[in-house]
Amino acid sequence: MKKILITFSLILTSQINSYSQTTYNTESIDEVINATYDILSGEAGERDWESFKSLFHESAKMGATILGQDDKRTFYGFTVDQYILNNDAFLKKSDFYEEEIGRRVMGFGGVAMAYSAFQYKFSKDGKIEARGINCIQLIKEKGRWWITSLLWEDESTNNKIPESLIHK
Image (cartoon, rainbow, N blue to C red; front, top):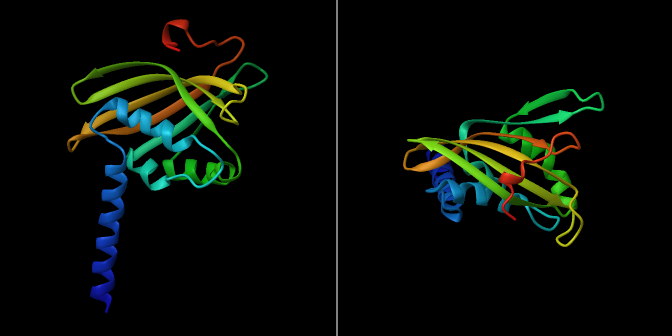
């Protein structure tokens, strides 16, 4: 019986991993970044967290710098699972639309760095709540691109997104 359960578990896991990795193309940097925005954005409700996690390398880190009222930055780092845990309840009850408004990518062999300017709204046609930049590091391993680090900072009065980075 134990052997049957282990076999079933392995089959189920491989189907979930296969599904999540075929849902989004991971052969190009553009597709990985586009999938990240696509999964997070939408009407209130469940997000496809398995597909989201499949975009990240197993050792990936995430984080944000927050500019305080004293104009000093504080860094908050977390894992992908912690990000999901911290944001799942909000996204289940709130519309959230994050869209890319510009990107610059530099790569060398199997490593790449993308600066992805974004803006987000709490309704599809609503006002822009905030803008900022996602700094996304990626590696190419096992024939596909993986996010190894995703860090961001929101735009502020004294820290504007460079116009040269905005494409829309």
